[in-house]
Image 1 (tube, one colour):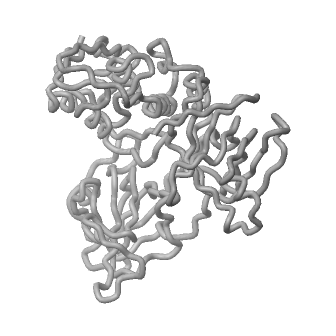
Image 2 (tube, one colour; image 1 turned 90 degrees about the vertical axis):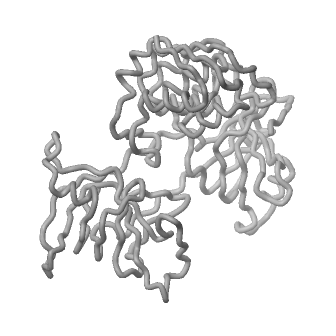
Image 3 (cartoon, one colour; image 1 turned 180 degrees about the vertical axis):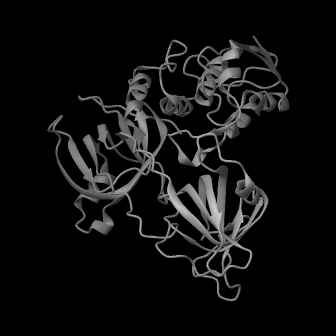
Length: 414
């Protein structure tokens, strides 16, 4: 839901905090000129680690990888994912363990896996120890890998699509102490708090000063749109603002699980001044910031506008579709004009094609300079630095054309 916010003092108040997490949602907590900690330099990618699957009986692609010739760069064969699904005692499952179709909550995932080699285990009975170089998928907001292995009789091994990869009795390198990321403090700069936030500031108990709020971006007209960022932390103090003594600088002990990359501030500054008026302003950005451009376009999409009727022809400028993020920026502008949104991943694209996002199928899409995408959107394993969770098979031009064909969209490549 959009908000409209007005104020009569300087500096411009750009960010609105809204409580959407209590029994009475959509309560404005305050509006501020800036948020230190909302835009930060991205963390460097974690380095791959060495792991061993002990006493392993490999199957399927893992068995094939053991016999594969070395990769061109001199390493071993490669697999996208090896899931480690613990085999618990069915009579005594660990406390807190939840079972799913593809594993349990104790499962761990190794991804971008290089199979380095194998050797007979110490006991020796036809099984092998398999050496890997890979990354352990860590999602701080959901699951932090434990320091010790779960109570298990071994592990079932699965691939990305759930295909069996065999079993192993144990591992090395997976379970050990990993320092939890330090909290990045946040300051609400030049904040005009509303009564709910003032109430938090008056409380003495830290436990009762917890702030959970979604961040809304306020543009120059006072319209506020929901971003994909939320803060959950304790209010630690407040002082008269360095920007205006009538406002407050409010400090929080932590911040955002996923802050914006610092380069995205320029994108949100542009939207603050008004919707982009020219196409391809995103073209000079790298993949990370193209993804942020599409995210900002999503946040600012006008949901109160009806779809155009079926049968329209749209023109996609493909000169800068050198990556999948560029495609989403380009197709958004093809359908909905400069700064337009029409999906920012495959699932979102399919959702937009069902209607409600500017147009209804069937329609015709003329893809100009399609040879650029033909050169760049090719098969392989994609490693976008902005999101380790999305590492996987690359989205190809042919795959995109298949998605359009399934929804009766005619694509003309030029």
